[in-house]
Length: 82
Image (cartoon, rainbow, N blue to C red; front, side):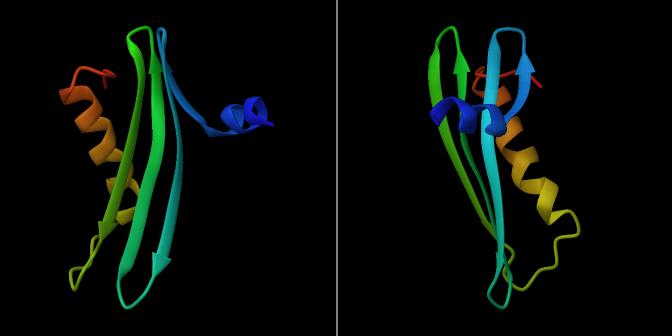
């Protein structure tokens, strides 16, 4: 079961580094979105969580912003290059 779930969650491979993740999106008078998962690399496993709430602002690219933020943080930390 775990192997099947990991196969479904695999989002990107960069050499020997792989990102596994799941998005989510809800509404409660504003957008609530998340992107959670982990990165497996030769150096180890790194878990991440990104929760975004739009507030009163309309974010045109809300869906992709969740992933963009995580990818940039992982890149800045040297965990996974863009």
